[in-house]
Amino acid sequence: MAPVFSLGPQPAFPDPRRADGEGLLAVGGDLSAPRLLNAYRLGIFPWYSEGSPILWWSPPERAILLPGDEHLSRSTRRALARRPFEVRVDTCFAEVIGHCARVERAGQDGTWITREIQEGYLALHRQGYAHSFEAWRDGELRGGLYGVSLGAAFFGESMFSLESYASRAAFAALCRRAWGWGFHLIDGQVPNPNLETLGARVVGRDAFLARLAAALQVPTRRGPWTAEE
Image (tube, rainbow, N blue to C red; front, side, top):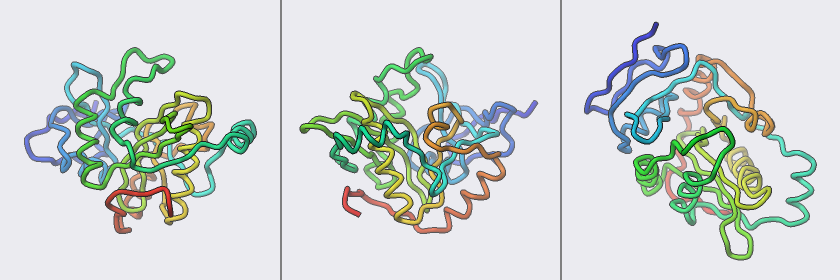
């Protein structure tokens, strides 16, 4: 069994390939911007429950989207064409992550997006690394997603919908923006059926880390993004 590492005060991590069979690599530390950025550069992310210590993961299999892989069902495309949303970018990051924390999800008891998580990613947003894509209808936020951008990689964190197809509209806008800018990949982290319906493919850790290393050679588009490309 691989050891689970205990993190100290420095924002450093062990080799992500040393994670255990389920992908758990380390425990502890904090969610400061330097530590979060170091984690993402190594393909590591935090995922834990309220009341638990911070757990850091490098799963053996990863769900990723590559240019052209994204998929929206015919019914989704028709619905978005019939009643399009207004998509905005980085106009209400705090609201998006707050909705992601509160939305009820099938098979989940509570949320992993703790207050600590929200504060950590808000700090990344203020520093220009975390971004939100937002679907609006009649002046109200109806859905969206948020994630972290480094180099030519976007690390998707969570999405929500208060209206049918709202998160799909935000997802489609993210894909257009990412591929239009020449991004190499969108990371969906742990494979799940929802990501599969959106076109994600599953790759092993080594393949993911190789793709990530190439993506990180590209300068980061840091700062607030806008809906206009």
